[in-house]
Amino acid sequence: MYKILFFAIIFGSITTSSNAQHKGCNTIERGPKANFLASTSDTTKPRGLADNYFLWDLGSVIKVKFLSGSPYLQDRIKTYAKEWEKYANVKFNFVSSGNADIRVFIGKGNGHDSYIGTVCKQIDDQDQTMNIDSADVANDEAFLRCVTLHEFGHSIGLLHEHSSPISGIKWDKEKLYTEYAKMGWSKEDVDFQVFETYKKSYTNGTKYDNKSIMHYPILPGETIDNYVVDWNMQLSPGDIALIKALYPFKGARKNEVTRLNIQNFKGISLVGNVEKMGISLFPSFDLKTGGKGGIVKMIFKFYDEEGYGLQDEDGTYQENGTVATVRSVLLPANKVVKYNQNGKKDFEFFLPVDQLPYGALDNNMQITFKIVYTTGEGELKNLYTSGAYMFKFKK
Ligand SMILES: [Zn+2]
Image (tube, rainbow, N blue to C red; front, side):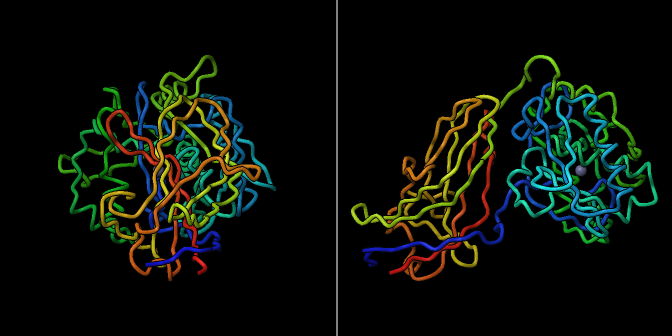
């Protein structure tokens, strides 16, 4: 039995852990394997697939910065990206210094990908949130435009149209596993990027658009019924209708959901609580909410030094079998809520020390913080996922 008389916490940000969320898109092209992160998705009523939980506020000015690339490519990408501004009530503000929401890395060998919508705000400032592969686009203006429209489509919340559950695409799966394996994709990569479809209710019974810029091409032989989709090189009427509905210039967005962003994150203070025989956690941040209010779960999960979840033994203080402390919080819409800011300790999470496996306190541990929303369909939607924080108790 450990005696907690006093302990201080050392913590710092390490790598984003193995359970990082929000898989971005991958390439529109069969490029090299991209840098995947997770994803979950949703859609809108009018048609097409977009992740409502990560849409930008109407009228947002989204800062974009290039981390690399020739002035020529940068200039072209900037021009093509701005096509979306004609139809969506957002602006891309390209900056050359300071912080930016979207960080575009132009280089060889990364493929093309982007985080979905505002997920980029959860990524470390120094990391790119979008890759554009110069090897594919440097000498192909039309393709550069197509890639730019596709990736910037993701950056304002659009998802792959071939993932529509009503597409009816009959992939030749074995063949595609073999094809994509040549590009270094695992079976899981192909399952996620190509075969996965979203729940049917996400499409709200609307149409599948095989002319969408968000659709991968389907080449001859990739389906068992010879269905093919050509390279879509421009925004389809469906793309335009969808983005206008998601980002109307007049009036409010019709299908708002609970959206949020964490700002001014100052860290997590962990304090040994002798009276209660446990650990109190005080995360310090502002929560900017958009859309509409709702109840979310805020969850701290505990891992060992290597990132393996500490196993729960009694069914309490856990999430999916990993030791965790959870709070349900009712969020207001369109507010900034402050938690444990300005030296206050007004928002506490607690974990009884006997919830930790024997020996855990002797070693480095990691925690992650996430905010989860349960949708009307009972799907768990990660609205925010932190990186992992390493700490160790001092005895
Ligand atoms: Zn994509």
